Image 1 (cartoon, rainbow, N blue to C red):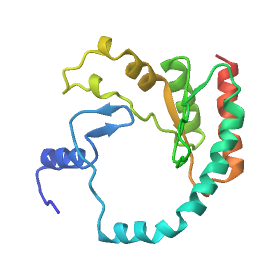
Image 2: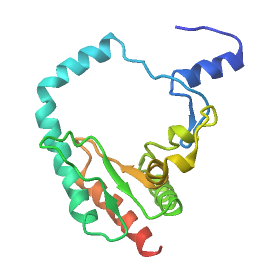
Image 3: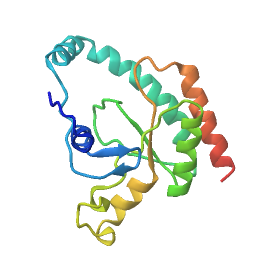
Image 4: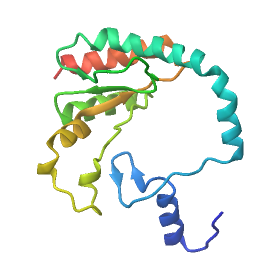
Length: 173
């Protein structure tokens, strides 16, 4: 534990323990997120017995998204080249950053938290001396990807709402 009366030091420590993330899109310093404690470790061990059941539940929800979005011409999906998959994420890429951001905001406004994983990409962080020109694929993916809500007990009706919101936004783009 860290205790301080210094507000600026508190803010820096808070950032350090949360990957340096200040907001959805702003990472201002290198940080870590190593908050697992003994209780969380025990819970993880307890869940190992349920892994296959939970993975089947995630796969069912993953496939609901996949069956709609794999056929949509304005969406790119990740190709899975593995005989086993954990179905922890449903990443989806749009044609542009502006479309991704519009869909992100539309989902958020309706209570759905999608994630702009991999954004900003490491080479664009202000404390890294990167060069966007050298990493065009990473830049493209980071600026167009959105990971949709996906967890074992996500209600099917909620998935349908997420799909409808995205399809409606894509129709208007």
